[in-house]
Image (cartoon, rainbow, N blue to C red; front, side, top):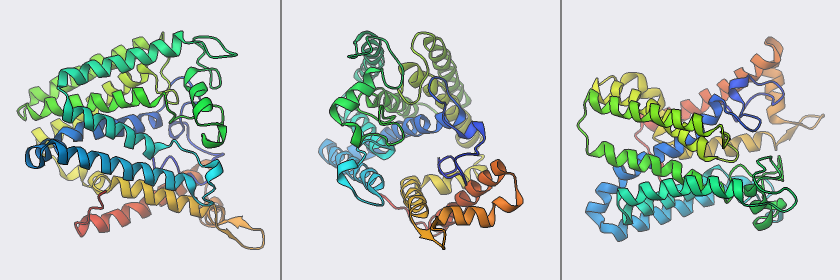
Length: 348
């Protein structure tokens, strides 16, 4: 997402690096649910041992504290640079991650895997039902347009347009109601993580992961005929489809890394992964400052000056835009590598 969120110019971007306009999906639409899924997978790995050492109370305290900090960091990013509380967007990417982590972590600590599976199914089926059956004033039931869907109506009614995504103001892609199926994405990861903890490190385990992924992918695609795959609405079919693709990807990584011990190829990704929260927060904050700082007689943004000076002269607009994004990503990889090399992990 650092690459996706930081093109040299928003007017020239390769299609795979854009979100789907509404229904449908692109490779970019896979990133957020994959991250939420793997957060869920990590919960049993991290909280299981902590539960054994500190007990349920200590583990719950950690989940609540971390969720509050991540939510607060998300609000801070939304407040930059003006800190105008009257127009502060309340939802956001980190806020959704915080709520998903909170719900999935608490459910892992206080319920069985069977209850978690029932909750997951209930969230997906319940969200489908209310989005299709509950009428929205002025639009009716089953309207899945940006302004006419139930999730958008709930956000406008509770948050108010001033506190929603400023690009649209009629819906928020990380809004209130659509966070419920996002929690189901995290719970799919929790169920996967618990299952993995009980399995031997074998090819058979990787195959079972992949087969489960294929089944979920097929179910998600079929479900999409009745409830379209849509990242902005985080539809139930989107949850199942992305959960399936995430399982297939996890199975491949598990087979390469855990079963066969091929670890060196993954080091560049580990450099990002061990400080993922710091990377996202800092890169987003700096990106905001680059479009806030004005320089020169023309009062241009610092980002546009850098793009027009360093990248635009030697490439087509779309390639120059991609080159800027790659350069920005490379700078952050270098900074994260320094932390990795010094064994510094910035935790919350």
